[in-house]
Length: 129
Length: 366
Image 1 (cartoon, rainbow over the protein chains, first blue to last red):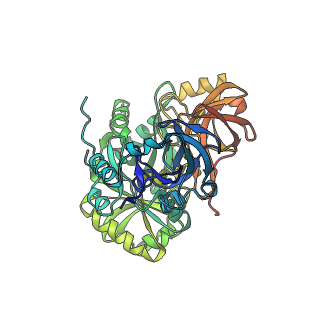
Image 2: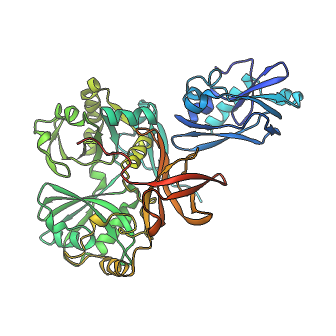
Image 3: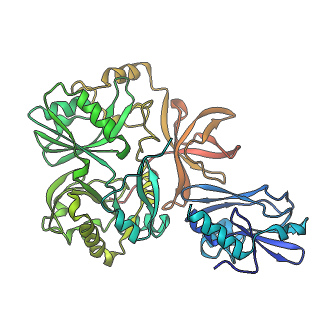
């Protein structure tokens, strides 16, 4: 269900490593929990983030949720399509709904992230609470 | 503190079967959404939606002096009602603030049927019973009714399939007692969405069957079961007040822009003298509609400022799916609550531009 080539956080972000960069998004579980997404607030290219910093926010009809930087680095590219079509986040969270591309400043952080299987367990555990 | 178990409606099992996302709404476990808030919202604007609003409370006042009591506890003029007519009204404290906002239905001259907010029903009942110096009978009868709202331009066509009586003959804010799918029901042409539609009240025993028959009748129109999420976006576009947000104990009807439900010169009612005093002294704050001009959504509770000074607060805010804008309602100093006034919403510690606009934000073509 969650792509096995991605790395995950307990806060429901994912990273796809492409050479020295990481593409960041939110998980299918996250978009489902949020419901219809109507607005995405993202940083500008050049902005730098430490792991765990607030990268931006996603607003659904009901509420706003922070997105945390799953890894440290500098924003290289932002998914501009989300400004006019935030619903892509609901429709294709692992594809067209990606958020930003970041230049990894501490690539070792990736090793500390969850695998798809571990993330799956985390979601299952939080559901049964 | 241990949380009390959530209350459920007789349609709880149906919501589960439909895989609704459930939410705690003032102590009630209610559907937030089924297919999604946006799809449900658009279904009501374009066609028809079905809501379970059985959490709403019912209070009935009976007896030869029922009208006198109803008139004494409400701001609007019950004396002007005719049998089969309904009226939006306010229950106020002596100081002029809201106990609740309610619908008063005159069944007969000695029977009034009140629809009140779910989480206020016990408070409302006590408030009315305490004011009962008219020897009327006051009863909290919520358990005897399921309430469904059928809303949207195809609501009439949908419900008519299940009713022998001519529903088109029921005028807005009128009601009739007749069968729906063979079940005796109170059928009112009222709603909380800004669309044409009906709210029906009937005994819980047949709740599931009636719900399913309405969904089947509306299938050709693309009927959607709708949750509280769409109910909120729809009522916000129509700029209808929500208790706990636009109105509460510290807000008077004049401040909330509900002057039209207050009849100052048609008999005494609880809160009247306080309102008269307020009118004399001047209304210092008023509810205003706003539209975001900057990027962002001002949510409930958000601080509003004007030129750097705190000016008010947002009572309800969010996206308006029909209008493709971010809108809301807020309290402002009266002299600022006029269309065109620029305001700043503090969203995540940043000021974001908005402007006061006329309400309602959305009005259906008549």
